[in-house]
Length: 143
Ligand code: ADP
Ligand code: MG
Figure (cartoon, rainbow, N blue to C red):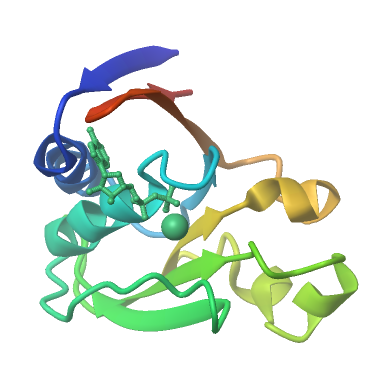
């Protein structure tokens, strides 16, 4: 477990940007943490690191957004940004197709509020935990 403390949203974006460089395709990132802890901010940097130049907006009201990404290994992976905040039970997730594309080597999947589908998450995933410390300070724990 690696713990990082950031003191600005830009630093959290940078952590995401750097993390993107390790991705090859097929990864599922489970992003845990309360509202405002920095999950979407991290995803903004991650997306930039994946060569996505579209703006990442919080998908809270629409659950999922799809982007075309590049990884170190190959171009044109699909990046799924999923936010399950509004989901009340795991049945609602079935319709998203999550289970079909999680772990597919052509995809990278980042899920906010993964706790909502704990029983559906693949065992082979990367858990990242965000914690609000104070004002502009956040802790990021990467498993
Ligand atoms: P979440 O997706 O976890 O609800 P967001 O990334 O949407 O959180 O929001 C984090 C908020 O906290 C943003 O308004 C961001 O500007 C602010 N913030 C302040 N300091 C930090 C930091 N060190 N890391 C991430 N966000 C920070
Ligand atoms: Mg968010």
